[in-house]
Amino acid sequence: MVRQDGYQFDSFSLEVSIPPLILQNEASLWSYMQSKYGSEPWFREKIHTGCVSIKDALKFSLINPLEKLLDCKSSLCPFRIRLTYTHTKASEGVAKCSDNGGSCKRRKTGESDSIGEGTLSSSVEDESFDFSKLFPKSENEPCNFSYNCSRTPFYFGGRYLKYSRNVSQTRWIIDDERMGEASVEEIIGIKVLQACGGDNYKFHAAGREDIDVRMLGPGRPFILEVQNTRLVPTEQFANDIEKMINKEENKLVRVNNLKLVGSDGWNLMREGEGEKQKQYAALVWTSRPLKDEDFQQVSSLKDLKVAQRTPIRVLHRRSPLEREKIIHWMKMETVAGSSQYFLLHLCTQAGTYIKEFVHGDLGRTHPSIGSILGCRAEILQLDVTDIKMECFLT
Amino acid sequence: MSGQIIEESNSSETKELEQKQDKQKEQDEDADEELRKLLLPDVQTLPSTPPSAVESNFAIYFVLDFMKPRHDQYVYRHANGLCVIGLAPSHVAFNDEGGITAIDFNVGKSDRSGVKVTGKRKKNAQHFESNTALCKVSTKNDSYIVRCCVKGSLLEVNQQLIKQPELLNASADREGYIAIIMPKPADWLKIKPSLVSLEEYKKLREVS
Image (tube, rainbow over all chains, first blue to last red; front, side, top):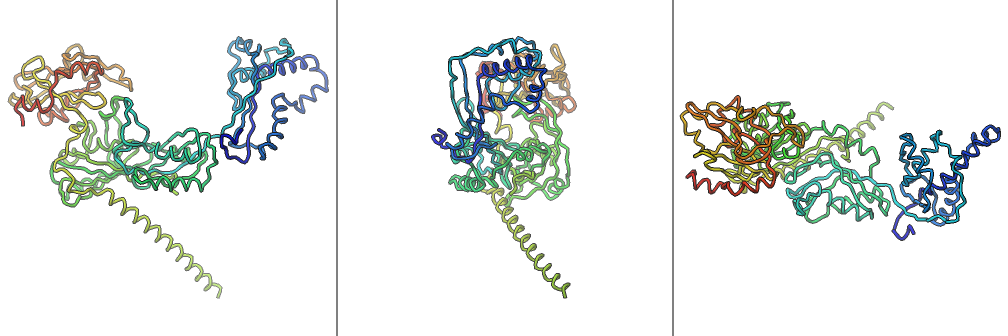
């Protein structure tokens, strides 16, 4: 059965789900015994040493035959096999439970998804409910049985570069039409998904850039979550996928340092995401030729405070606010053959709108390059040249 | 004797470390060089005057003689539906000597510069008709009412104009914009036929 789906595994973790009715019967039996024998010393001792619940007993009896059948050991691991037993007859206890005011809390257990089971197990702890009143009735119908197996998600971390000005970071569709020719998340996600036989992927990146902005330099950190993989990815596997993505002919996207990450990957990426500085290179045109003094004036500005009102291009979906951002440093580089075009290198606080800092957004970003130089400035191209974060650099 | 041996082994270690650092430096320089090549544009392909941010990001329309002769205004519509409203270069106010001297947003029933619109859903935004007054601009001897031209929610007025009304004379088409309005898609479709394009505007007003 597991072979059919093509799962690769070397150990498994067993989960069992049993009908609420059985739990109810067990609880009422226990409660009855408690009231009848509660004072007896042998009973108290039994409680002390612990009793095996029906669910655990079932699990124990199933594990050995399964181990033999699948030819491997059972342990706590990402590959889960779930056996679900259900019964057509609903538990009476559940209905009574939900009448119990608000004291029955719905507790989410990792293993059971049957709501009835969850409610019942929490109400077993609620002592005010007397289970001895519900006598177990003998049942003639057998249980229904179903099984399924799955794996907990795997996480790949790395940095991506985007060489194209026509590729969005995530899938972008308006009115059934795709914007751009591809997306970074699909280029990386689909390859990884196919290679390890997963059900689906989720792409998470540390920030984003516009579709017409290239992501260069060391790249932007990202984590790709893959669910229910059939194969088990290894470090070598991650290396191979990285090479495969980078070999693509159209060279739209590049991946660096792809590797498996654990839960610490999230912390590395999210930590200080809003504080990290970003570095850019913008191709700027000015309405008058520039002189050395202009270059020097721009370079001399350190930690320049800029007030940015929400840019018009995002004003439809963001709050109208004025946000203060810091431009840490700027450097202008001449472009051979032109006195009105130059490359502006700048390092800014996370969240700064660079395009608006160049053209001023009708005066709503102040100061802007234009206002600093006393002329009109336009931005033709923008590239991200560095994301100053520590994660996924090797 | 032993001191000498230690010195020798130290120097070979430091040599290895130096070599490693040199190699890393080389790799970094190569990466920088590659980056530079990607960044530098080919000047041959660059236009002598590139399109402005407004030209690249907005569809430019004009409304002529809005309710009164020569009351010409522009409407810049962004792809996201927002409309920037302002005075067209042919507006009658610019003919007065000295140009525009003051602006007052306190017209109609409220002071348009006082409303605070907040949040993604644009709470508190006032809904105006196309003929609702936005502000009054004054010249030496006259004053003129500027209207919305587009039916929708008023998101903001250009506060800078209150302190610097001369922006209207110097750059009415950019920093001198008057307001930003968010029309509903249906309302935009209704008004669009009455607007003219940049080409038509140039012809009709004989502007270059």
